[in-house]
Length: 99
Image (cartoon, rainbow, N blue to C red):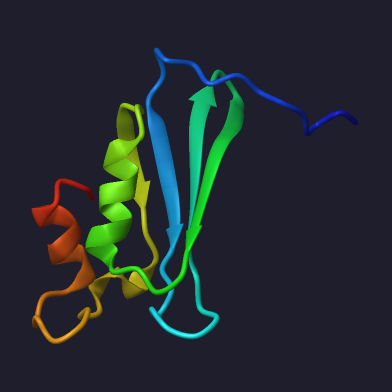
């Protein structure tokens, strides 16, 4: 049905992200899908996967990309605390300009 194929990155469209937050250890990876809404289509244009990186390090990687971001979709566990700082992942993300 030709539903999958290569799609171009549209510099004029916002890039949205959908996150799966890893627990930060072992084989539990953080995965991020980068997508654009183009008419009635969803174009997946990029993917990032990391293990053993803090949320701050992952956000730094996102900020280095030349995308203009729209929405960042995160799962419920964005509200859990990260490390010993006492801040939730959501609070960390907001302080770093994401979410």
